[in-house]
Amino acid sequence: SQTIHQWPATLVQPVGSPLSLECTVEGTSNPNLYWYRQAAGRGLQLLFYSVGIGQISSEVPQNLSASRPQDRQFILSSKKLLLSDSGFYLCAGQGPGTEAFFGQGTRLTVV
Amino acid sequence: GENVEQHPSTLSVQEGDSAVIKCTYSDSASNYFPWYKQELGKRPQLIIDIRSNVGEKKDQRIAVTLNKTAKHFSLHITETQPEDSAVYFCAAGLPYGQNFVFGPGTRLSVLP
Image (tube, rainbow over the protein chains, first blue to last red):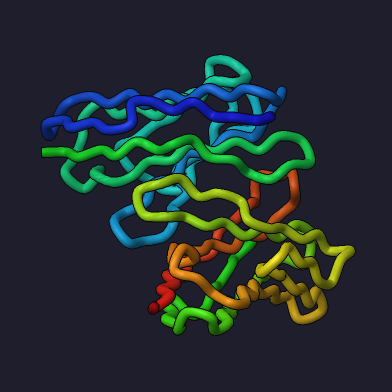
């Protein structure tokens, strides 16, 4: 079965510090991969998606970036966090002909 | 690209009553329509999905209907229970495409 491992589950970071969130996929090859952000009580905001290694599309201009160094690895980064970057970050994957499945999420608090 | 709208944004029902959530989409090429349930602090999880060659699909107390001509689809939950309380997201897109788009979500509260 398809699973996504996402870590860490919670993170508290000071303003201006760097960020690196990672997710890895098991059970499928060549998946589409997504990073979403969810503010408290709000919907899923698509940040980045990737259809293959090194291929990243950005949906929302911001101080975040994403990379896909391997087929099943997707990384969300920032050089300098802002207070507004706080939220619940979800990594999702979608294998050929399948539904999207989500990682457990990372709750990021920028202080 | 695809645009998905979802209504209502919040819904309260009495335990045992039915709940209906409706979504509309804009891209006629979309052919896959899943529904996700997200409990507080947890990841969204797929509860049911439908593809464009099917008009209705049921799974116990949950059903989804699709009207491809009108570009809308709905989630129906019958005999609601307190554990049905959650945020529900619809989505539309190709089953393997980068234009997989979620609706804004519906917060369902089932009152005892």
